[in-house]
Length: 298
Image 1 (cartoon, rainbow, N blue to C red):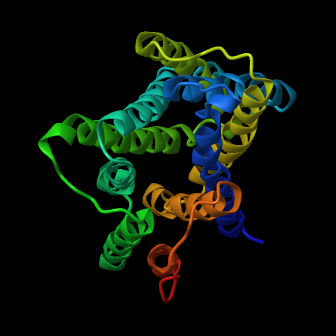
Image 2 (image 1 turned 180 degrees about the horizontal axis):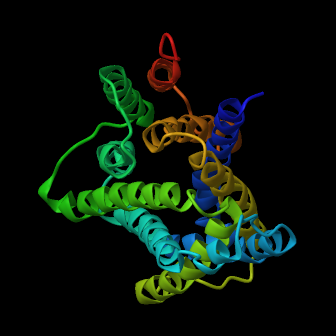
């Protein structure tokens, strides 16, 4: 198996792992599981993964060709990655309060457009017409997969704006990770960006005044699972893939996440998947197949 195939496999497994995130979050929001607030869930997602991330970094430090390179660790870029990821998580959770789930989810999935736009300038990636067609088709499929209708209403403008901030923030996080992967290992990026993200998310959770502590033991177990599966494993594998694949293609393939999330919601939360949603999932998968189909002669 070559490097590209390994990276594509890591990306697919990473998308599956972050597909568990909305399932775990939906459970943690329930009163019988602690009734944690959305911003608090995002905080614990990163906080509980940090000890293991730093342990991995300590056990397997990044390889470098020179001591000079090690001394020039891009701390500012890592802080920026943490900032973007914190804004992504918090704005996404807050957007649900001010707009429909359909609007929030669909607008947040515009992140690949943002990544594609900047990948051409930052990384000189060559993006052909077929890729843009696949991207558009994947977003249409994702919209159908949501199952509910997209609507624009004046009273929802704040929530819609927060959803777009989510897309831009997550897209910017992916671009920053791609840049960091030129000189840093996945474990470095995850450990340092998480360290910078946690204080910001803590402040936002405090400002929101939501539930941060609960006596429900089962709720803490869910949050630990969210941290280990979706953040440590999912985002870690995605960070690895960014070191070997174009940013535009990587971000597009992350649209596997809503497909996995819908399937997992059906399995674990008894959320119905009707024929319309299945058709949307098939469209997304078809679009990704088009985007990943090797160019003749390459």
